[in-house]
Image 1 (cartoon, one colour):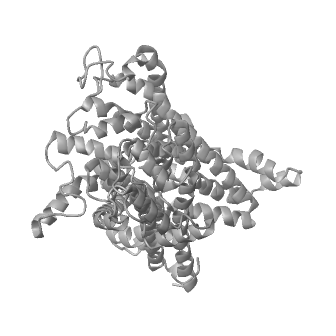
Image 2 (image 1 turned 135 degrees about the vertical axis):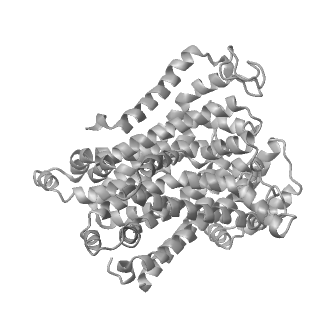
Image 3 (image 1 turned 90 degrees about the vertical axis):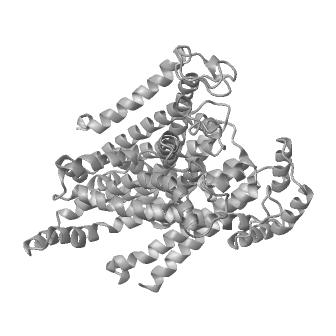
Length: 333
Length: 278
């Protein structure tokens, strides 16, 4: 893997982080008046109140240097964001936003990682089967139905699953089993509880994602199947399974990984809303609470973190890509 | 032939029926049921209120028919803005090349990877958008990178074709070549981009509303779902409340998906042959 490739990918990642922090800065400036005071005043008008409002304003002003020249403000803002210092949560003052995020983050990462891997792996495999001659008719007839399901956004699938399983059949806990950030039970019970509250959100994300990967992989397989090297493999007498996995899929799959990098943003956005529907104790539900409480610092912190998380995932995919595609590893592409 | 594609026909038929619901419906069901306390509270469907009522006494059917056009409007406005910006930037980037291309391409490449819902959440949480038009415009302004990338890629290959050379030699300037020579040849891609952008815009708008960040002065499917979700309608078994907007959106997204797959097939004959064989 060439050093230039790694450096370029790293640069893109840093740009994403910088842009995300800057957007937050600009948006705060878009609102008229002092951002923090303005938010607190509005919450006051809506009937809410905060202990130590003046103190919050003072600490926020100090932390983000709101009394200083514009460029200094900007530099300080970006610097603290990049260090995940978002100041204190407005609705849970003085708990830092970072602490609240830290408690909910593992739940979201776990849900996202597992369900995305299942959806991608299974969807890609089924897409390949759809284009493959040896696939049984019954699969060809039923699999395209899953593609239609993928047209429905994750949160609508979540609502439907909630209605069928949690309300209709009483099979799974409808709401999260744990308060955000902590469970009393330990060991196996705890694992069971985590799985129980993850199954429906995970199923929404898998069902919603499958079809897209199937559709993409089917198209890619069609492009590969006419190739001469497959005919050669067949002529050599290789088994049909070996040709499918080692020759056809291996070559067709590469663009799917690029698409995965591009799709991560919408998967994360979808997961946030799915969490809200199921009251899953991750960042999505925390974000929902923050919105209900007009806790702007917490909203900023969570959205920024999710943008950065997507950036990190894309960076990892980009760096793994050359391992799968020798043309990039040796700098020929 | 386009019209022989069953997916396109089914997709368009669904869209037309939804439009009928939104145009004929309000003529049959007056806006009276939109107000709180206008009908009974949390009533399952009856002959008088065909889709029942919500806990504040609003008629679900009235909300559904009066919310149809505003919901579609958000998609059309946001999708239209996003696609228009994307097509212009994609054409310029692909045709002019050079530093302009480098800048537009780099910005679009970074922008597609940023989950735009996060930006939308921060924006709407602070600005508290109070009209569906403003929300649609904000969504549209963030929706351009996808179509810009698609149109740029196609423009790159079209600009090397003979008819572009002939147009240039016959004295057409760059703007004329881009919009009068290249753009008409990209119509199927533009349409596919538009359908995708409309679908994405409605997904984003309903998502924002589920989070409680949308305008609450216009009936939309997103607002219905927002109210229903906040009240816990699903776990309380009030299917007549959360069901209609969910079904509406499922049909809408399904139809847009069928249309976009059909358009992809038109633009990419190799895929079409494979589907026909399968």
